[in-house]
Image (cartoon, rainbow, N blue to C red; front, side, top):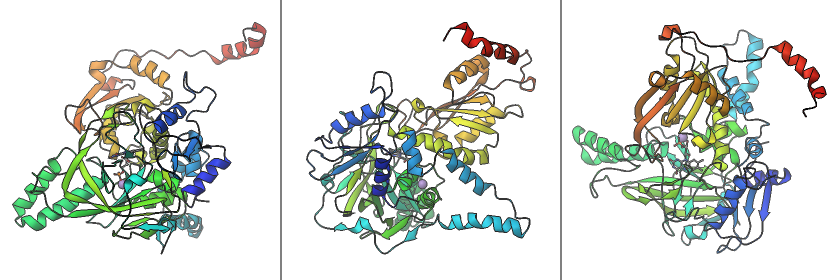
Amino acid sequence: MAYTDLRDFIAALERSGELKRIKVEVDPLLEITEITDRVSKSGRPGNLPGMTPGGPALLFENVKGHPGAQVLINQFGSARRMNLALEVDRLDRVAERIHQFMDVKSPQGILDKIKMLPMLADLGKFFPKTVSSGSCKEVIKRDKFSLLDLPVLQCWPKDAGRFITLPCVITRDPKTGKRNVGMYRMQVYDERTAGMHWQRQKVGAEHYRERMRAAAASTAGEGGAIRSAAVDIMARSSGGSVLAEGQRPAGKMEVAVAIGTDPALTFSAIVPAPPDIEEYMIAGFLRQSPVELVKGETVDLEVPANAEIVLEGYVNLDELRTEGPFGDHTGFYSLADEYPVFHLTCMTHRRNPIYATTIVGKPPMEDAWMGKAVERIFLPLMRVTIPELVDVNLPVEGIFHNLMIVSIKKSYPGQARKVMNAIWSLGQAMFTKCIIVVDEDVNVQDVAEVTLKALNHIDPERDIQFTLGPVDSLDHASRLTNFGSKMGVDATRKWPSEGFTRPWPDEILMDEKTKALVDKKWKELGIE
Ligand SMILES: Cc1cc2nc3c(=O)[nH]c(=O)nc-3n(C[C@H](O)[C@H](O)[C@H](O)COP(=O)(O)O)c2cc1C
Ligand SMILES: [Mn+2]
């Protein structure tokens, strides 16, 4: 049964022994980070030995400066909790369900059609349902409210301030009317404003540019002027506009933010889905039950009915403000940049809302587990365009965009390079700085095996492919923000048809007979 809301999930975590309530007073400034960081890295050398990797979820019930507030952190931060969040015993189950839908063949007869009925019934559960009210409306604040009332963390010493780190940011595509839910952190500036850190290539940023294009079109009139305004807008390095102050098209875009939603919905906000697929549907698929939505009070957007906290407001099309620095999941502070500003018009919440948050920093952190879930779930979807793909590993220290290791079933010369190019043109996988392609007999989940075989198998000058393209906004080494180079390593065995005519050595493997012999003698040898 799907979790109705975050509290339902917290109860499940508690039943499974996956939650620790903390009654000692803690400071949302830095202290919660230090505690959570130690827990996230538990089981690592020198750090909380004996605790399972990722430790428990933490519910802080005594937060300095915020009497009565509760802060939930690390809710997704272990393999077991990620499974609990998506209600599976292993993440491949989600992939299997996706596969089932993609594997549909034309029914051959009435029996085939009957077999398809449960799947069609399932499909109906994906679509969100608008309901008349929900618990997120228990308290509605239109006049007296402040962002500073929320127990928002300052995560790291050199952060520019307090950041809302687990917000589901809801926007609407002005052209299609479709809604997007993306997780973009928000720096709290004051009582009623916050930064809106949608990076340039993300869907929220595209909705914002669509509004700008429309606004520029309606003020510019002439076709040429419209086009140049649109080009200028897109030429800006961050989420905003390159037009000089005062020349930017006036107008605003409505935005809503949900904090503390059921885990499937929170997770759907980070999933790198195609822009036109609503995350509300993805969440419906994951939880196998429709997401319930309610109308915003002051915005024409639907918000999750059972969210703990909902912020409603808008961003001005002609306003940018410095956002950051912020201690990021690269393990370094991401640099300050210009981003739009979110203005609050209303705050609604449950009584005694639970503020859900996370911290990012040097891996492994909570987001490592979410990233691994994305890796598993997206494998069958990647195979749609890259059918030769056998497995994929995004090592946690590669922070998802720096390193992807893939194994392929190679059938023709040059195929590894074709796979690299396919990855670089596949949604957010475009950000991948380094791709290593190995043959199917290499277990990509075993980084030691990959290191051994990949490095043995390459002639670097011949097998490394450089290219240029978009890079993650968080990349601090690229020549320009958002633009730089990437590298692909073809570590597959080279074929004569690829110009490699030297003999290829056999891998060292013991024969089965000798292994069986030693197995039999093992105890007698007295080594163990
Ligand atoms: C904890 C966490 C924080 C994130 N913060 C940001 C952020 O500040 N800006 C951003 O563009 N993406 C951020 N992301 C990544 C996006 O959520 C992710 O790329 C998502 O797929 C974007 O959704 P969209 O495709 O609908 O734009 C964050 C992810 C996680 C897990
Ligand atoms: Mn999206």
